[in-house]
Image 1 (cartoon, helix red, strand yellow):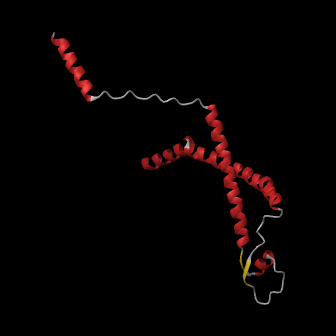
Image 2 (cartoon, rainbow, N blue to C red):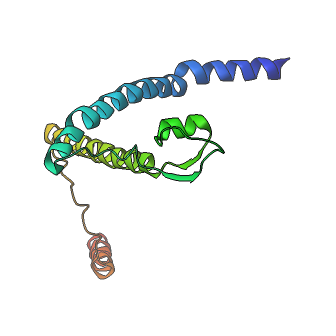
Image 3 (tube, rainbow, N blue to C red):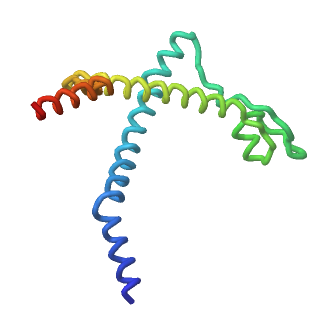
Amino acid sequence: MSKARGFIQEFQEFAVKGNMIDLAVGVIIGAAFGKIIDSLVRDIIMPLVNFILGGQVDFASKFLLLRTPEGYAGPQTYDALTKAGAVVLSWGNFVTVAINFILLAFVVFMLVKGVNAMRNRLQPPVVEVAAPAATPEDVALLREIRDLLKRSV
């Protein structure tokens, strides 16, 4: 019975005292921050990229049709084909997600770089004091001889 009580007490300490709470707060803030970054990429950066490139940078509608269901005569769009059961290699969606990931990673990198620069400006500079150099062995021996001579006189 005491092992079970010890296990339960240990779990309570783990869940309440720190690690679990810190992890939960980190996940919640991370999810909210992820939404902000996703919006920044989708709503601000991608429109600028589309404007600069003069078109829509979205490959989501690009695909390679591998096999059409027998007797299918409907539209050749991705949605219609997948609903009909066609085998479709959706390479365009992968490219779009990869581009969004690269942009997202770049934005996060720039934010972390900015926060670190601000943090470095706010913290006082660390001054390292050099440790005194070790006394050479011959000097230490000469001092010891000097001290012995002083005591004997």
